[in-house]
Image (cartoon, rainbow, N blue to C red; front, top):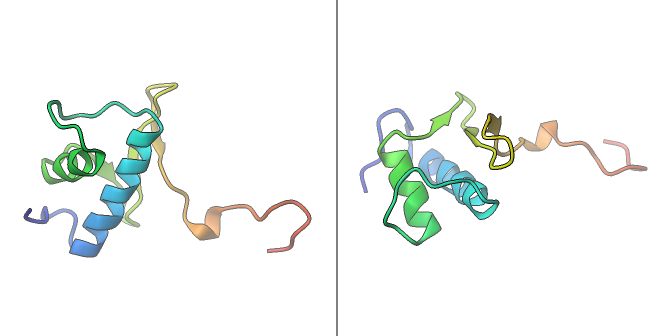
Length: 87
């Protein structure tokens, strides 16, 4: 599969595809019909420019509960440490 121009690199393509697979596993609706494998769905959606992501490479998608755009994956610097532990 050819990497879409907007993605920039094969590494970002793989990271974004993985983020989309996580969304699909949590119940997000596929934007492509007729494919069963989540990885293939994610890669095809990205290849057909059906997904939106920011400059940091964080995928935006649809939250199945609210149908609103949300950021799918937080970066490690944005995650809160467990209670009782300093960051």
